[in-house]
Image: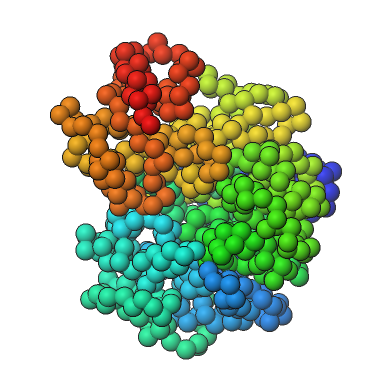
Length: 636
Ligand code: PRX
Protein backbone atom coordinates (compact mmCIF):
# COMPACT_ATOMS: atom_id res chain seq x y z
CA UNK A 1 0.00 0.00 0.00
CA UNK A 2 1.35 3.44 -0.81
CA UNK A 3 1.30 6.25 1.69
CA UNK A 4 1.48 9.90 0.70
CA UNK A 5 5.02 11.16 1.23
CA UNK A 6 4.28 14.47 -0.46
CA UNK A 7 5.18 17.50 1.66
CA UNK A 8 3.38 20.79 1.01
CA UNK A 9 3.43 22.36 4.46
CA UNK A 10 5.03 21.99 7.87
CA UNK A 11 2.32 19.63 9.17
CA UNK A 12 2.99 17.35 6.18
CA UNK A 13 6.68 17.44 7.07
CA UNK A 14 5.99 16.37 10.67
CA UNK A 15 3.66 13.60 9.49
CA UNK A 16 6.02 12.29 6.79
CA UNK A 17 9.00 12.51 9.14
CA UNK A 18 7.26 10.31 11.73
CA UNK A 19 6.16 7.89 9.01
CA UNK A 20 9.68 7.70 7.58
CA UNK A 21 11.16 6.48 10.86
CA UNK A 22 8.33 4.09 11.71
CA UNK A 23 8.14 2.58 8.22
CA UNK A 24 11.68 3.15 7.07
CA UNK A 25 11.86 0.55 4.29
CA UNK A 26 8.45 1.47 2.91
CA UNK A 27 9.43 5.13 2.95
CA UNK A 28 12.69 4.64 1.03
CA UNK A 29 10.96 2.28 -1.35
CA UNK A 30 8.36 4.93 -2.20
CA UNK A 31 11.04 7.61 -2.58
CA UNK A 32 13.00 5.38 -5.00
CA UNK A 33 9.87 4.53 -6.96
CA UNK A 34 8.74 8.11 -7.39
CA UNK A 35 12.08 9.70 -8.21
CA UNK A 36 14.08 7.27 -10.33
CA UNK A 37 13.41 5.13 -13.33
CA UNK A 38 14.71 1.59 -12.85
CA UNK A 39 15.49 -1.06 -15.44
CA UNK A 40 14.83 -3.71 -12.80
CA UNK A 41 13.34 -3.15 -9.38
CA UNK A 42 14.96 -4.27 -6.11
CA UNK A 43 14.63 -7.57 -4.26
CA UNK A 44 15.39 -5.89 -0.95
CA UNK A 45 15.31 -2.18 -0.01
CA UNK A 46 18.38 -2.18 2.21
CA UNK A 47 20.85 -4.28 4.08
CA UNK A 48 22.87 -2.06 6.39
CA UNK A 49 25.01 -3.20 9.25
CA UNK A 50 26.70 -0.59 11.43
CA UNK A 51 28.54 -3.43 13.26
CA UNK A 52 30.49 -4.36 10.15
CA UNK A 53 30.20 -1.23 7.98
CA UNK A 54 28.52 -3.11 5.13
CA UNK A 55 25.90 -0.80 3.57
CA UNK A 56 23.70 -1.75 0.57
CA UNK A 57 20.58 -0.13 -0.85
CA UNK A 58 18.10 -1.34 -3.47
CA UNK A 59 19.72 -4.76 -3.70
CA UNK A 60 19.27 -6.53 -7.01
CA UNK A 61 17.97 -3.38 -8.74
CA UNK A 62 19.35 -2.13 -12.06
CA UNK A 63 19.47 1.33 -13.59
CA UNK A 64 21.60 3.75 -15.56
CA UNK A 65 22.34 7.00 -13.71
CA UNK A 66 23.14 9.01 -16.86
CA UNK A 67 19.91 7.87 -18.47
CA UNK A 68 18.06 9.10 -15.37
CA UNK A 69 19.79 12.48 -15.61
CA UNK A 70 19.39 12.95 -19.35
CA UNK A 71 17.62 10.45 -21.65
CA UNK A 72 14.43 10.03 -19.64
CA UNK A 73 13.71 13.77 -19.77
CA UNK A 74 13.91 13.64 -23.57
CA UNK A 75 11.56 10.66 -23.58
CA UNK A 76 9.21 12.74 -21.40
CA UNK A 77 9.14 15.50 -24.04
CA UNK A 78 11.63 17.87 -22.42
CA UNK A 79 14.33 17.47 -25.10
CA UNK A 80 14.26 21.18 -25.97
CA UNK A 81 14.32 22.31 -22.37
CA UNK A 82 17.57 23.97 -21.24
CA UNK A 83 19.56 21.51 -19.14
CA UNK A 84 22.88 23.28 -18.67
CA UNK A 85 23.65 26.98 -18.84
CA UNK A 86 27.41 27.48 -18.68
CA UNK A 87 28.70 30.95 -17.81
CA UNK A 88 32.40 31.61 -18.43
CA UNK A 89 34.91 33.64 -16.47
CA UNK A 90 34.54 36.63 -18.80
CA UNK A 91 31.33 38.64 -19.06
CA UNK A 92 29.26 37.60 -22.08
CA UNK A 93 30.79 34.13 -22.38
CA UNK A 94 28.14 31.45 -22.20
CA UNK A 95 27.02 28.16 -23.72
CA UNK A 96 23.55 26.73 -23.40
CA UNK A 97 22.73 23.03 -23.84
CA UNK A 98 19.25 21.54 -24.02
CA UNK A 99 18.61 18.06 -22.64
CA UNK A 100 18.85 16.76 -26.22
CA UNK A 101 22.22 18.47 -26.67
CA UNK A 102 23.55 17.19 -23.33
CA UNK A 103 22.47 13.72 -24.43
CA UNK A 104 24.44 14.08 -27.66
CA UNK A 105 27.54 15.37 -25.86
CA UNK A 106 27.42 12.59 -23.27
CA UNK A 107 27.04 9.97 -26.03
CA UNK A 108 30.07 11.44 -27.84
CA UNK A 109 32.22 11.27 -24.71
CA UNK A 110 30.95 7.78 -23.80
CA UNK A 111 32.02 6.53 -27.24
CA UNK A 112 35.37 8.30 -26.88
CA UNK A 113 36.02 6.68 -23.49
CA UNK A 114 35.18 3.27 -24.93
CA UNK A 115 37.47 3.90 -27.90
CA UNK A 116 40.28 4.49 -25.39
CA UNK A 117 39.60 1.09 -23.85
CA UNK A 118 37.80 2.39 -20.74
CA UNK A 119 35.45 -0.28 -19.40
CA UNK A 120 32.98 -0.62 -16.59
CA UNK A 121 34.77 -0.45 -13.22
CA UNK A 122 37.86 1.36 -14.60
CA UNK A 123 38.82 4.53 -12.74
CA UNK A 124 38.99 7.80 -14.65
CA UNK A 125 40.67 10.82 -13.07
CA UNK A 126 39.26 14.21 -14.06
CA UNK A 127 41.21 17.42 -13.43
CA UNK A 128 39.22 20.01 -15.33
CA UNK A 129 37.93 23.50 -14.66
CA UNK A 130 34.20 24.14 -14.20
CA UNK A 131 33.38 23.75 -17.90
CA UNK A 132 30.73 21.69 -19.73
CA UNK A 133 33.28 19.02 -20.71
CA UNK A 134 33.64 18.23 -17.00
CA UNK A 135 29.91 17.59 -16.65
CA UNK A 136 29.84 15.53 -19.86
CA UNK A 137 32.86 13.47 -18.75
CA UNK A 138 31.24 12.64 -15.41
CA UNK A 139 27.95 11.65 -17.04
CA UNK A 140 29.76 9.62 -19.71
CA UNK A 141 31.62 7.68 -17.00
CA UNK A 142 28.32 7.09 -15.20
CA UNK A 143 26.76 5.93 -18.46
CA UNK A 144 29.37 3.27 -19.23
CA UNK A 145 29.97 2.35 -15.58
CA UNK A 146 33.48 3.76 -15.26
CA UNK A 147 34.21 5.27 -11.83
CA UNK A 148 35.09 8.95 -11.96
CA UNK A 149 37.35 10.67 -9.49
CA UNK A 150 37.28 14.43 -9.96
CA UNK A 151 40.15 16.45 -8.51
CA UNK A 152 39.46 20.13 -7.81
CA UNK A 153 41.64 22.43 -9.96
CA UNK A 154 43.15 24.06 -6.84
CA UNK A 155 45.01 20.88 -5.91
CA UNK A 156 48.71 20.43 -6.67
CA UNK A 157 50.67 17.96 -8.82
CA UNK A 158 51.48 15.95 -5.71
CA UNK A 159 47.79 15.71 -4.77
CA UNK A 160 46.93 14.54 -8.29
CA UNK A 161 49.65 11.92 -8.13
CA UNK A 162 48.61 10.50 -4.76
CA UNK A 163 44.92 10.37 -5.72
CA UNK A 164 45.50 8.78 -9.12
CA UNK A 165 47.80 6.17 -7.62
CA UNK A 166 45.43 5.44 -4.76
CA UNK A 167 42.53 4.66 -7.11
CA UNK A 168 44.69 3.23 -9.93
CA UNK A 169 43.23 5.49 -12.63
CA UNK A 170 43.76 4.39 -16.23
CA UNK A 171 42.98 7.73 -17.85
CA UNK A 172 43.12 11.34 -16.74
CA UNK A 173 41.08 14.05 -18.43
CA UNK A 174 42.45 17.56 -18.10
CA UNK A 175 42.73 20.85 -19.99
CA UNK A 176 45.46 23.33 -20.81
CA UNK A 177 44.29 25.56 -17.99
CA UNK A 178 41.74 28.02 -16.71
CA UNK A 179 41.31 31.67 -15.83
CA UNK A 180 39.92 32.19 -12.36
CA UNK A 181 39.37 35.92 -12.20
CA UNK A 182 42.50 37.45 -13.74
CA UNK A 183 44.72 34.53 -12.82
CA UNK A 184 45.70 31.84 -15.32
CA UNK A 185 46.04 28.41 -13.72
CA UNK A 186 48.12 26.00 -15.75
CA UNK A 187 46.37 22.70 -15.05
CA UNK A 188 48.20 20.74 -17.74
CA UNK A 189 51.65 21.32 -16.28
CA UNK A 190 50.40 20.03 -12.90
CA UNK A 191 49.29 16.83 -14.60
CA UNK A 192 52.63 16.58 -16.44
CA UNK A 193 54.49 17.01 -13.18
CA UNK A 194 52.34 14.36 -11.47
CA UNK A 195 53.05 11.93 -14.31
CA UNK A 196 56.78 12.67 -14.26
CA UNK A 197 56.85 11.93 -10.52
CA UNK A 198 55.13 8.60 -11.20
CA UNK A 199 51.55 7.61 -12.00
CA UNK A 200 52.19 4.11 -13.37
CA UNK A 201 48.54 3.16 -13.96
CA UNK A 202 47.75 6.16 -16.23
CA UNK A 203 47.79 5.04 -19.86
CA UNK A 204 46.49 8.20 -21.56
CA UNK A 205 45.95 11.91 -20.87
CA UNK A 206 42.95 13.41 -22.66
CA UNK A 207 43.39 17.18 -23.02
CA UNK A 208 40.48 19.59 -23.53
CA UNK A 209 41.75 22.70 -25.36
CA UNK A 210 39.67 25.01 -23.19
CA UNK A 211 41.00 28.30 -24.51
CA UNK A 212 43.02 28.65 -27.67
CA UNK A 213 45.95 30.17 -25.79
CA UNK A 214 48.29 29.30 -24.25
CA UNK A 215 49.19 26.10 -26.08
CA UNK A 216 50.39 23.23 -23.96
CA UNK A 217 53.47 21.14 -24.34
CA UNK A 218 52.59 17.83 -25.97
CA UNK A 219 53.64 14.82 -23.88
CA UNK A 220 53.87 11.20 -25.07
CA UNK A 221 50.58 10.10 -23.41
CA UNK A 222 48.58 13.16 -24.53
CA UNK A 223 45.54 12.96 -26.78
CA UNK A 224 43.54 15.94 -27.98
CA UNK A 225 39.86 15.89 -26.93
CA UNK A 226 38.83 17.36 -30.28
CA UNK A 227 40.37 14.43 -32.13
CA UNK A 228 39.14 11.67 -29.81
CA UNK A 229 35.59 12.92 -29.17
CA UNK A 230 33.91 12.24 -32.51
CA UNK A 231 30.64 13.60 -33.99
CA UNK A 232 27.44 12.35 -32.36
CA UNK A 233 26.12 8.85 -32.80
CA UNK A 234 23.63 7.37 -30.31
CA UNK A 235 25.10 5.43 -27.42
CA UNK A 236 23.09 2.62 -25.87
CA UNK A 237 23.11 2.97 -22.10
CA UNK A 238 23.83 -0.37 -20.41
CA UNK A 239 22.16 -1.49 -17.15
CA UNK A 240 24.21 -1.29 -13.98
CA UNK A 241 23.56 -2.72 -10.54
CA UNK A 242 22.37 -0.37 -7.85
CA UNK A 243 25.51 -1.05 -5.82
CA UNK A 244 27.99 -0.59 -8.68
CA UNK A 245 30.44 2.23 -7.81
CA UNK A 246 29.59 5.62 -9.31
CA UNK A 247 32.47 7.78 -8.12
CA UNK A 248 35.32 8.27 -5.70
CA UNK A 249 35.90 11.70 -4.21
CA UNK A 250 38.92 12.34 -2.01
CA UNK A 251 38.40 14.27 1.19
CA UNK A 252 40.54 15.17 4.17
CA UNK A 253 40.08 13.50 7.50
CA UNK A 254 41.70 14.04 10.85
CA UNK A 255 44.48 11.54 10.25
CA UNK A 256 46.79 10.63 7.39
CA UNK A 257 46.27 11.29 3.71
CA UNK A 258 42.90 12.14 2.12
CA UNK A 259 40.45 9.24 1.90
CA UNK A 260 38.71 8.09 -1.27
CA UNK A 261 35.02 8.34 -0.34
CA UNK A 262 33.08 5.84 -2.45
CA UNK A 263 29.48 6.37 -3.59
CA UNK A 264 27.40 3.85 -5.52
CA UNK A 265 24.80 4.30 -8.25
CA UNK A 266 21.26 3.56 -7.03
CA UNK A 267 21.29 4.99 -3.53
CA UNK A 268 23.23 8.11 -4.50
CA UNK A 269 20.95 9.14 -7.34
CA UNK A 270 17.81 8.40 -5.29
CA UNK A 271 19.12 10.49 -2.42
CA UNK A 272 20.41 13.46 -4.43
CA UNK A 273 17.19 13.64 -6.46
CA UNK A 274 15.03 13.32 -3.32
CA UNK A 275 16.93 15.86 -1.21
CA UNK A 276 17.28 18.39 -4.05
CA UNK A 277 13.54 18.34 -4.66
CA UNK A 278 12.60 18.50 -1.01
CA UNK A 279 15.01 21.21 0.15
CA UNK A 280 14.92 23.56 -2.86
CA UNK A 281 11.36 22.80 -4.07
CA UNK A 282 12.22 23.42 -7.75
CA UNK A 283 9.33 23.86 -10.16
CA UNK A 284 9.22 22.83 -13.84
CA UNK A 285 10.25 26.21 -15.28
CA UNK A 286 12.85 27.07 -12.64
CA UNK A 287 16.45 28.03 -13.26
CA UNK A 288 18.74 26.81 -10.50
CA UNK A 289 22.25 28.21 -9.84
CA UNK A 290 24.73 26.44 -7.56
CA UNK A 291 28.04 28.34 -7.47
CA UNK A 292 30.12 25.31 -6.44
CA UNK A 293 32.86 23.76 -8.54
CA UNK A 294 32.14 20.24 -9.77
CA UNK A 295 35.39 19.21 -8.09
CA UNK A 296 33.63 19.20 -4.69
CA UNK A 297 30.74 17.09 -3.43
CA UNK A 298 28.38 20.10 -3.61
CA UNK A 299 29.10 20.29 -7.33
CA UNK A 300 28.59 16.54 -7.78
CA UNK A 301 25.31 16.31 -5.87
CA UNK A 302 23.68 19.71 -6.39
CA UNK A 303 25.12 21.21 -9.55
CA UNK A 304 24.99 18.03 -11.60
CA UNK A 305 23.37 14.80 -10.44
CA UNK A 306 20.48 16.06 -8.24
CA UNK A 307 19.20 18.88 -10.49
CA UNK A 308 19.58 16.89 -13.72
CA UNK A 309 17.87 13.84 -12.21
CA UNK A 310 15.01 16.26 -11.45
CA UNK A 311 14.96 17.71 -14.97
CA UNK A 312 15.89 21.19 -13.75
CA UNK A 313 17.85 23.85 -15.68
CA UNK A 314 21.20 24.10 -13.90
CA UNK A 315 23.67 27.00 -14.16
CA UNK A 316 27.41 26.28 -14.03
CA UNK A 317 29.79 29.19 -13.48
CA UNK A 318 33.48 28.99 -14.26
CA UNK A 319 34.64 32.11 -12.45
CA UNK A 320 34.83 33.66 -8.98
CA UNK A 321 32.19 35.83 -7.25
CA UNK A 322 34.07 39.15 -7.55
CA UNK A 323 35.18 38.94 -11.18
CA UNK A 324 35.12 41.42 -12.79
CA UNK A 325 32.98 43.13 -10.12
CA UNK A 326 31.18 42.03 -6.94
CA UNK A 327 27.86 42.28 -8.85
CA UNK A 328 28.73 39.30 -11.05
CA UNK A 329 26.63 36.60 -9.34
CA UNK A 330 23.57 38.89 -9.31
CA UNK A 331 24.11 39.88 -12.94
CA UNK A 332 24.18 36.19 -13.89
CA UNK A 333 21.03 35.78 -11.76
CA UNK A 334 19.25 38.56 -13.65
CA UNK A 335 20.47 37.50 -17.06
CA UNK A 336 19.22 33.95 -16.68
CA UNK A 337 16.26 34.67 -14.37
CA UNK A 338 17.62 32.42 -11.65
CA UNK A 339 14.98 31.28 -9.15
CA UNK A 340 17.08 29.21 -6.75
CA UNK A 341 20.57 30.26 -5.72
CA UNK A 342 22.97 28.12 -3.65
CA UNK A 343 26.39 29.24 -2.36
CA UNK A 344 28.81 29.11 0.58
CA UNK A 345 28.95 31.35 3.69
CA UNK A 346 32.46 32.55 2.75
CA UNK A 347 31.17 33.96 -0.55
CA UNK A 348 28.30 35.63 1.31
CA UNK A 349 30.65 37.18 3.89
CA UNK A 350 33.09 38.43 1.26
CA UNK A 351 30.28 40.02 -0.78
CA UNK A 352 28.67 41.48 2.36
CA UNK A 353 32.02 43.07 3.30
CA UNK A 354 31.95 44.95 -0.02
CA UNK A 355 28.68 46.66 0.86
CA UNK A 356 25.11 46.61 -0.45
CA UNK A 357 25.64 48.79 -3.54
CA UNK A 358 26.90 46.01 -5.90
CA UNK A 359 23.83 43.96 -4.93
CA UNK A 360 21.08 46.57 -4.93
CA UNK A 361 22.03 47.87 -8.38
CA UNK A 362 20.78 44.51 -9.75
CA UNK A 363 17.15 43.39 -9.87
CA UNK A 364 17.17 39.78 -8.47
CA UNK A 365 13.40 39.73 -8.80
CA UNK A 366 13.43 36.16 -10.14
CA UNK A 367 14.97 34.81 -6.91
CA UNK A 368 12.72 32.67 -4.73
CA UNK A 369 15.04 30.52 -2.59
CA UNK A 370 18.57 31.09 -1.24
CA UNK A 371 20.76 28.26 -0.02
CA UNK A 372 24.00 27.98 1.92
CA UNK A 373 26.40 25.09 2.55
CA UNK A 374 29.85 24.03 3.67
CA UNK A 375 30.49 25.78 6.98
CA UNK A 376 28.51 27.35 9.78
CA UNK A 377 26.88 30.59 8.70
CA UNK A 378 27.01 33.33 11.30
CA UNK A 379 23.66 35.07 11.98
CA UNK A 380 24.92 38.45 10.63
CA UNK A 381 25.85 36.91 7.26
CA UNK A 382 22.54 35.00 7.22
CA UNK A 383 20.60 38.24 7.83
CA UNK A 384 22.51 40.11 5.13
CA UNK A 385 21.85 37.30 2.65
CA UNK A 386 18.19 37.27 3.60
CA UNK A 387 17.52 41.00 3.69
CA UNK A 388 19.88 42.48 1.07
CA UNK A 389 20.14 39.66 -1.49
CA UNK A 390 16.69 38.14 -0.87
CA UNK A 391 14.86 41.36 0.06
CA UNK A 392 13.24 39.46 2.92
CA UNK A 393 11.08 37.46 0.53
CA UNK A 394 13.30 34.40 -0.09
CA UNK A 395 13.57 31.60 2.46
CA UNK A 396 17.16 30.72 3.40
CA UNK A 397 17.99 27.02 3.42
CA UNK A 398 21.07 26.38 5.56
CA UNK A 399 21.93 22.86 4.40
CA UNK A 400 24.13 20.66 6.56
CA UNK A 401 25.83 17.63 5.03
CA UNK A 402 29.22 16.14 4.07
CA UNK A 403 31.13 14.41 1.27
CA UNK A 404 30.42 11.20 3.15
CA UNK A 405 26.65 11.74 3.40
CA UNK A 406 26.24 12.20 -0.37
CA UNK A 407 23.45 14.70 0.14
CA UNK A 408 21.77 17.10 2.57
CA UNK A 409 20.71 15.53 5.89
CA UNK A 410 19.65 18.52 8.01
CA UNK A 411 18.07 21.60 6.44
CA UNK A 412 14.95 23.69 6.25
CA UNK A 413 12.65 22.80 3.33
CA UNK A 414 12.22 25.98 1.30
CA UNK A 415 9.03 27.83 2.21
CA UNK A 416 7.94 25.00 4.53
CA UNK A 417 10.22 24.92 7.59
CA UNK A 418 10.26 28.08 9.74
CA UNK A 419 13.89 29.26 9.74
CA UNK A 420 16.21 30.74 12.36
CA UNK A 421 19.44 32.59 11.43
CA UNK A 422 22.37 30.20 11.99
CA UNK A 423 20.36 27.00 12.42
CA UNK A 424 20.24 24.11 9.94
CA UNK A 425 16.86 23.39 11.63
CA UNK A 426 15.48 19.85 11.20
CA UNK A 427 16.44 16.52 9.61
CA UNK A 428 15.01 15.42 6.27
CA UNK A 429 12.48 12.57 6.50
CA UNK A 430 14.35 9.28 6.77
CA UNK A 431 17.25 10.83 8.67
CA UNK A 432 17.59 10.30 12.41
CA UNK A 433 20.23 12.53 14.04
CA UNK A 434 21.22 12.13 17.67
CA UNK A 435 23.51 13.97 20.01
CA UNK A 436 25.94 12.08 22.23
CA UNK A 437 27.69 13.40 25.31
CA UNK A 438 31.44 13.00 25.71
CA UNK A 439 30.72 10.07 28.00
CA UNK A 440 28.95 8.31 25.12
CA UNK A 441 25.37 8.80 26.33
CA UNK A 442 22.49 9.88 24.05
CA UNK A 443 21.06 13.27 24.93
CA UNK A 444 17.33 13.75 24.88
CA UNK A 445 15.88 17.23 24.26
CA UNK A 446 18.06 20.30 24.56
CA UNK A 447 21.80 19.90 24.74
CA UNK A 448 25.11 19.90 22.96
CA UNK A 449 27.61 17.22 21.95
CA UNK A 450 28.73 14.96 19.11
CA UNK A 451 26.38 14.82 16.12
CA UNK A 452 25.68 11.24 14.99
CA UNK A 453 23.14 9.64 12.65
CA UNK A 454 21.32 6.63 14.03
CA UNK A 455 20.55 4.71 10.84
CA UNK A 456 21.65 4.47 7.24
CA UNK A 457 20.15 6.40 4.29
CA UNK A 458 20.57 5.66 0.56
CA UNK A 459 23.14 8.44 -0.12
CA UNK A 460 25.56 7.29 2.55
CA UNK A 461 29.13 6.52 1.45
CA UNK A 462 29.79 2.82 1.01
CA UNK A 463 33.42 2.72 1.99
CA UNK A 464 36.90 4.16 1.66
CA UNK A 465 38.27 3.07 -1.69
CA UNK A 466 40.92 0.38 -1.31
CA UNK A 467 40.68 0.15 2.50
CA UNK A 468 37.94 -2.14 3.77
CA UNK A 469 38.54 -1.37 7.47
CA UNK A 470 38.74 2.41 7.26
CA UNK A 471 35.03 3.17 6.89
CA UNK A 472 34.13 1.28 10.04
CA UNK A 473 37.13 2.53 12.00
CA UNK A 474 36.61 6.19 11.08
CA UNK A 475 32.86 6.58 11.26
CA UNK A 476 31.21 3.67 13.07
CA UNK A 477 33.55 2.61 15.84
CA UNK A 478 33.42 5.59 18.16
CA UNK A 479 29.66 5.54 18.85
CA UNK A 480 28.59 1.92 18.32
CA UNK A 481 25.62 1.46 15.95
CA UNK A 482 25.78 5.13 14.92
CA UNK A 483 27.50 7.07 12.14
CA UNK A 484 29.74 9.76 13.66
CA UNK A 485 29.85 12.93 11.59
CA UNK A 486 32.93 14.54 13.18
CA UNK A 487 30.80 17.63 13.92
CA UNK A 488 29.60 19.04 17.17
CA UNK A 489 26.00 20.29 17.37
CA UNK A 490 23.52 21.86 19.73
CA UNK A 491 19.81 20.99 19.84
CA UNK A 492 17.38 23.58 21.17
CA UNK A 493 13.96 23.30 22.81
CA UNK A 494 12.23 23.26 19.41
CA UNK A 495 14.46 20.32 18.36
CA UNK A 496 16.34 22.56 15.93
CA UNK A 497 19.97 21.68 15.21
CA UNK A 498 22.76 24.28 15.34
CA UNK A 499 25.99 22.95 13.83
CA UNK A 500 29.01 24.02 15.88
CA UNK A 501 31.79 22.86 13.56
CA UNK A 502 34.34 20.04 13.50
CA UNK A 503 35.30 18.24 16.69
CA UNK A 504 38.32 16.63 15.05
CA UNK A 505 41.46 17.95 13.36
CA UNK A 506 39.75 18.96 10.15
CA UNK A 507 40.08 22.64 9.21
CA UNK A 508 37.52 24.43 7.03
CA UNK A 509 38.96 27.36 5.06
CA UNK A 510 36.37 29.09 2.87
CA UNK A 511 34.38 25.87 3.25
CA UNK A 512 37.26 23.80 1.82
CA UNK A 513 38.20 20.85 3.92
CA UNK A 514 41.82 20.28 4.98
CA UNK A 515 43.37 17.82 7.40
CA UNK A 516 46.04 18.97 9.83
CA UNK A 517 48.00 15.75 9.19
CA UNK A 518 48.47 16.38 5.45
CA UNK A 519 49.73 19.93 6.08
CA UNK A 520 52.07 18.81 8.86
CA UNK A 521 53.51 16.02 6.67
CA UNK A 522 54.29 18.65 4.03
CA UNK A 523 56.09 20.90 6.57
CA UNK A 524 58.26 18.11 7.85
CA UNK A 525 59.82 17.67 4.40
CA UNK A 526 61.59 21.02 4.94
CA UNK A 527 65.14 20.24 6.02
CA UNK A 528 65.18 22.91 8.76
CA UNK A 529 61.97 21.75 10.45
CA UNK A 530 61.79 19.39 13.45
CA UNK A 531 58.01 19.35 13.83
CA UNK A 532 54.94 21.45 13.28
CA UNK A 533 51.29 21.85 14.19
CA UNK A 534 48.56 23.18 11.87
CA UNK A 535 45.49 24.76 13.40
CA UNK A 536 42.39 26.60 12.22
CA UNK A 537 41.87 30.07 13.71
CA UNK A 538 38.59 31.97 13.46
CA UNK A 539 38.51 34.32 10.46
CA UNK A 540 35.72 36.81 9.84
CA UNK A 541 35.72 36.20 6.08
CA UNK A 542 36.91 32.65 5.44
CA UNK A 543 35.43 31.04 8.56
CA UNK A 544 38.81 29.68 9.55
CA UNK A 545 42.35 30.48 8.45
CA UNK A 546 45.44 28.30 8.68
CA UNK A 547 48.10 29.03 11.31
CA UNK A 548 51.27 26.97 11.54
CA UNK A 549 53.40 26.50 14.63
CA UNK A 550 56.86 25.41 13.51
CA UNK A 551 59.80 24.13 15.55
CA UNK A 552 63.12 24.60 13.76
CA UNK A 553 66.30 22.60 14.30
CA UNK A 554 68.32 23.97 17.21
CA UNK A 555 71.08 25.44 15.05
CA UNK A 556 68.66 27.16 12.62
CA UNK A 557 67.36 30.72 13.07
CA UNK A 558 63.99 31.79 11.64
CA UNK A 559 64.25 33.80 8.41
CA UNK A 560 61.74 35.10 5.85
CA UNK A 561 63.27 32.56 3.42
CA UNK A 562 62.26 29.66 5.65
CA UNK A 563 58.68 31.02 5.79
CA UNK A 564 58.65 31.38 2.01
CA UNK A 565 60.09 27.90 1.55
CA UNK A 566 57.45 26.39 3.83
CA UNK A 567 54.62 28.13 1.98
CA UNK A 568 55.98 26.89 -1.35
CA UNK A 569 56.32 23.39 0.00
CA UNK A 570 52.75 23.25 1.29
CA UNK A 571 51.39 24.67 -1.95
CA UNK A 572 53.36 22.03 -3.86
CA UNK A 573 52.39 19.11 -1.65
CA UNK A 574 48.75 20.00 -0.89
CA UNK A 575 47.69 22.94 -3.05
CA UNK A 576 47.12 26.68 -2.94
CA UNK A 577 44.08 26.27 -0.69
CA UNK A 578 46.37 25.25 2.17
CA UNK A 579 48.44 28.47 2.12
CA UNK A 580 49.05 29.45 5.76
CA UNK A 581 47.95 32.91 6.87
CA UNK A 582 50.53 33.02 9.65
CA UNK A 583 53.60 31.00 10.57
CA UNK A 584 54.68 31.10 14.24
CA UNK A 585 58.23 29.90 14.90
CA UNK A 586 58.27 28.43 18.39
CA UNK A 587 60.77 26.51 20.55
CA UNK A 588 58.43 23.55 21.18
CA UNK A 589 54.82 22.32 20.97
CA UNK A 590 52.39 21.72 23.84
CA UNK A 591 51.85 17.94 24.08
CA UNK A 592 50.14 15.52 26.40
CA UNK A 593 52.19 12.83 28.09
CA UNK A 594 51.15 10.45 25.32
CA UNK A 595 52.59 12.87 22.73
CA UNK A 596 49.34 14.31 21.33
CA UNK A 597 49.56 17.97 20.33
CA UNK A 598 47.14 20.10 22.37
CA UNK A 599 45.74 22.19 19.54
CA UNK A 600 43.17 23.76 21.85
CA UNK A 601 46.03 25.59 23.62
CA UNK A 602 47.68 26.62 20.33
CA UNK A 603 44.36 28.08 19.11
CA UNK A 604 44.35 30.40 22.13
CA UNK A 605 48.03 31.29 21.82
CA UNK A 606 47.64 32.09 18.10
CA UNK A 607 45.10 34.80 18.91
CA UNK A 608 47.01 35.96 21.99
CA UNK A 609 44.35 34.89 24.47
CA UNK A 610 47.06 34.12 27.00
CA UNK A 611 44.87 34.31 30.10
CA UNK A 612 42.30 31.80 28.95
CA UNK A 613 44.23 28.64 28.14
CA UNK A 614 41.86 26.23 29.89
CA UNK A 615 43.07 23.08 31.63
CA UNK A 616 46.83 22.66 31.11
CA UNK A 617 47.34 19.96 33.75
CA UNK A 618 47.78 17.15 31.22
CA UNK A 619 50.74 18.83 29.51
CA UNK A 620 53.95 16.80 29.52
CA UNK A 621 56.04 19.98 29.80
CA UNK A 622 53.94 22.87 31.10
CA UNK A 623 56.87 25.31 30.70
CA UNK A 624 56.61 25.17 26.91
CA UNK A 625 53.45 27.30 26.98
CA UNK A 626 55.32 30.29 28.40
CA UNK A 627 58.04 29.89 25.76
CA UNK A 628 55.47 29.82 22.94
CA UNK A 629 53.76 32.86 24.46
CA UNK A 630 57.06 34.76 24.44
CA UNK A 631 57.67 33.77 20.82
CA UNK A 632 54.17 34.89 19.76
CA UNK A 633 54.50 38.19 21.65
CA UNK A 634 57.81 38.83 19.89
CA UNK A 635 56.16 38.59 16.45
CA UNK A 636 55.44 41.77 14.60
O1 PRX B 1 31.71 20.65 9.44
C1 PRX B 1 30.64 20.45 8.56
C2 PRX B 1 30.72 21.49 7.46
O2 PRX B 1 31.38 20.87 6.39
C3 PRX B 1 31.77 19.53 6.74
C4 PRX B 1 31.72 18.65 5.52
O3 PRX B 1 32.64 19.12 4.59
P1 PRX B 1 32.68 18.56 3.11
O4 PRX B 1 32.75 17.08 3.16
O5 PRX B 1 33.76 19.29 2.40
O6 PRX B 1 31.29 18.93 2.51
C5 PRX B 1 30.94 20.27 2.34
C6 PRX B 1 29.70 20.38 1.51
C7 PRX B 1 28.59 19.52 1.96
C8 PRX B 1 30.79 19.15 7.80
O7 PRX B 1 31.28 18.08 8.59
N1 PRX B 1 29.38 21.91 7.01
C9 PRX B 1 28.76 21.58 5.86
N2 PRX B 1 27.57 22.21 5.76
C10 PRX B 1 27.43 22.95 6.87
C11 PRX B 1 28.58 22.75 7.67
N3 PRX B 1 28.71 23.34 8.87
C12 PRX B 1 27.71 24.12 9.31
N4 PRX B 1 26.59 24.37 8.59
C13 PRX B 1 26.40 23.81 7.38
N5 PRX B 1 25.30 24.08 6.68
